[in-house]
View (tube, rainbow, N blue to C red):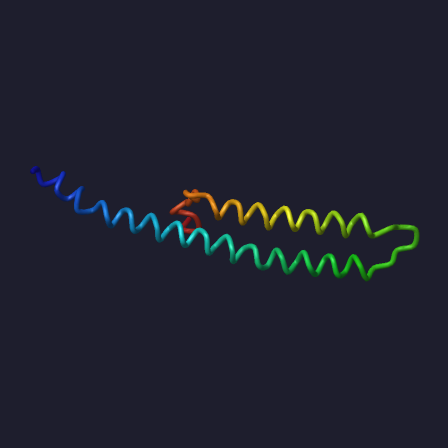
Length: 94
């Protein structure tokens, strides 16, 4: 067997492991990014519930914030459940 093919065959498990590690890293970054967003959403909803502006009903704002937050969380969770999470290996290195 030619040397390049042998080397390629021996490197396949390493490439597969690297892909799995990158997948896991991407999932962790998504979850870590979701935490501050969820906290900010809760803070905004709390502030909107406390603010009383004359003549303005804040209930539609609270409904919109809640619906948007739930949609964002469902979107991230759906994205994480994909069998192949698209990972940009060079993100953050530039």
